Length: 460
Ligand code: HEC
Ligand code: HEC
Image 1 (cartoon, rainbow, N blue to C red):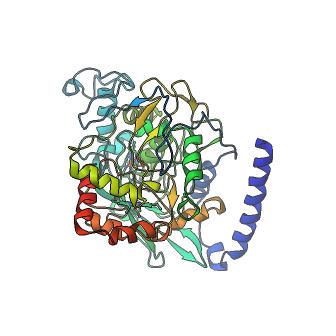
Image 2: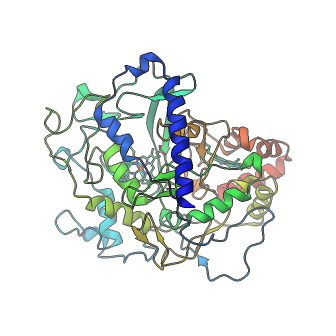
């Protein structure tokens, strides 16, 4: 079965790769692509198999009965800097410093490392976006999101996307003034992307592939989401259903950590040892710009980031009132919950995920979460035109965005992936495409119902 699937996938890849190459305009065939960019693309590869991981977990969907007999309990929630018991709390946070911090020992140690400000001597840059994970993931506690955006650019010819030289992620800072990446005039496919929250992401990681596929399969054809198949860098080569990032481009928190350490901060690890270029020009070790040999970190920091995020509690709700409850009923009635799934149960403790690299512990297994997302990609008319990678496999993702999880919504003043929407009313009205029906239904609500729905959203 697996071999059959693999053959089908490979045939499809070869076929699409062929047509893709033929479609490539002559100019871009000659456009410079650095070896590093090619390596980056090569690393983002899986072997075509997608383990189910566990029996599909329970979830809420319109018209679907919740399983009556379940051992699951609600996941802990709160914005309180306290562990969800995946790892112990550790020594008081304010007693931890550069000298006594022990990576992977505790929540507080790993939080310290997530907050650590990196400098040139640690390997920062030469091109980067910020000095610490916390710089972009801090509102209202370490690990959540912020208003910081990153820029992504490239260009689209004949429907085919080409990344900017050096990759679609623009590094807006650098350790030398002359190598800050600037956007090229011809790269007119452009977007900002907001920094999302990673609170409770350990529970999201613990959702079995089969659960996300079951959610997809239960959606009506017009609203059906797309599950991405993405590699787990630290795994055995098998894929996972992606669920992290605006394009659901990662399925493992450790993979995301390696990726962010390199791409947001410029720090290489044994998993991703090649430094980023500055718009295609080599600026790594051996050039005049980078004094630190690769890998700049032994990979322990990335493990500490992942363990910190795995140990965070899920976002908590604000006060629930008759008004918010009425609003939730309207939310469900007009089909918002088709994509913004209101409850999902994580896989049982003991389930092996991430290509054999992670076993779900008691603290994360069999937990009910309320992310208000299906973690699938949809085309609701807001797509930024930039695929996960400019390869045939991911081409379709250009026009899609992952259903934004609505938990923690009351902490965000800038909405949607680009942060360019200012109010909840405008965010809903911006839904077109696969979500056009529910935004039309919203528009037709009476004023009092609209305000109940908005009150519900503000309680998340
Ligand atoms: C310059 C700001 C910035 C820095 C620094 C940064 N991030 Fe992020 N983070 C983002 C943005 C923007 C996204 C969404 C990116 C996308 O989808 O294209 C993101 C997404 C994530 C996600 C996915 C969350 C989800 O649920 O979808 C995780 C996990 C994450 N970052 C972890 C980290 C870690 C770990 C570090 C430190 C190594 C880090 N980030 C540093 C801006 C930042
Ligand atoms: C077909 C799937 C789908 C349906 C149905 C849907 N949404 Fe969404 N929603 C999305 C996607 C995808 C995004 C992210 C879009 C983006 O960032 O460009 C989103 C984003 C949002 C946001 C912005 C969240 C943030 O953090 O910025 C809000 C608020 C929201 N939806 C509310 C609703 C409400 C209310 C309804 C019902 C009227 C609804 N959605 C129906 C898919 C859907």
